[in-house]
Length: 138
Image (cartoon, rainbow, N blue to C red):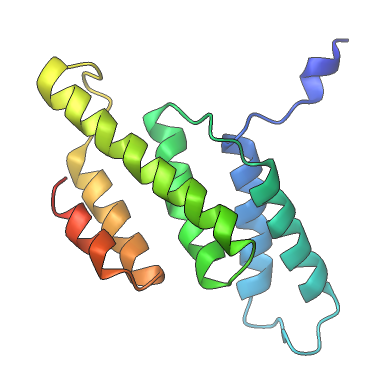
C-alpha cells in the first residue's frame, strides 16, 4: 500500500472536513459560551486554513473554496490567511470566466449564473459591497 493513499485531496476533501466543523459550531444546541469543544472546533478550522494550498484549479474546487471561506472569515478564524485564499479563488474564477468567454477554454464546465450567486452570497456573509459589485460582472 502506497503512502499516498492516505493523502487528502486539497482542497476538496479538506473543505469537507471544514464544513463538518462549521456545522458543529453553528449547531443551535451548541452553547458556544460553555461548550468546551468550541475552542477545539475553531482550532481545527484554523488548521484547515493552514492546510489549504493555493492549488485549486478546477471550477468545482474554486467554487468549494469560495463557498467555504466566507464563513471562516465572518467567524474571524485565521482571518488574514482566509481572506488571501478567498481573494485568490475569486481572481481564479474571474480568469476562468475570461478564458471561457474569449477562448472557450472550459466548454460546458463553467456556469456564470452559479458564479454570480456564489460571489453574491459570499459578499453578504462577509459584508463586502465591492465583492457584490464584482459579482455583477459574472
